[in-house]
Length: 372
Image 1: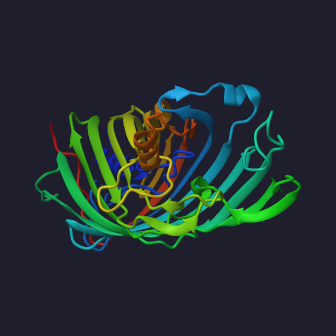
Image 2: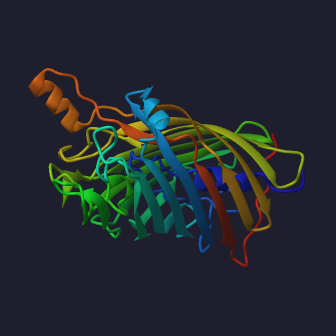
């Protein structure tokens, strides 16, 4: 095999870190990077410029793990079409320390009946749309490879820390139809939390990423990520005015297996993902409005490497979706003695596409895959 198999690590430690889930409002990529596009780890002075694009349509409603199929059958489902673009620049500070900066942009289009006069038969029954577009929450971070890359070529793991800045608008408004007591007016109000561009909080992120070669053509990748949002809420009332939008934590985990195909530069991968929003935050109060839940997905992908250019396409397919009880649901259940659990719309799959280009040092020495 002529191309360097270690180049595949970048796809699975960078490109496969995307998050997105519909009404369960996960907005950002996880992790801060650190791998490069032509040799598993960035060396001092090297850059990796990359762009990640992802899309999903959420429309299937779940309460717990039970799908409410009648929503689609009756045509009352909420439909979120979401598009994300993340531009990231990774830099090798030393051969083991790295930094990353991510500039995200998002566009959401939300279609519903219940927000525009109510679902039939008791509501107006008219479907309208609200939307949001613009800069989302910028992320800064850095990390450290635990083992010297020059000595540990077959495996390595890094620990990264970062911050998420509240640069995305978390008070986006739009027009809502059939409002008022007579349901005949149009009002400008705050859009749903799931299509807000940001959450308004300063987040603290930690991630662990690593790779382990099993053979010259096969390797494992591991990605673990958690973002803590210590702030309770962002001070923006929901459309009903009953609660403030919370600043929720987020988490993600992925374990994958990749194989170098007989076609030079072509990598096939298969992984499992678990990602979501918890009902209880790690730090601070969990009060405020949120739709917590998680998705477990099977994540097939294909990657192609040509010189310093890397392309990746992945399509995580959901196998389990769970809208868990929120903090408020638990309080209501405790106070009334009646079990309460809200619903949320989830996507069947997510389309992830990324392209990355490495800017190498002129004195870079190429590292071959170690012999078995």
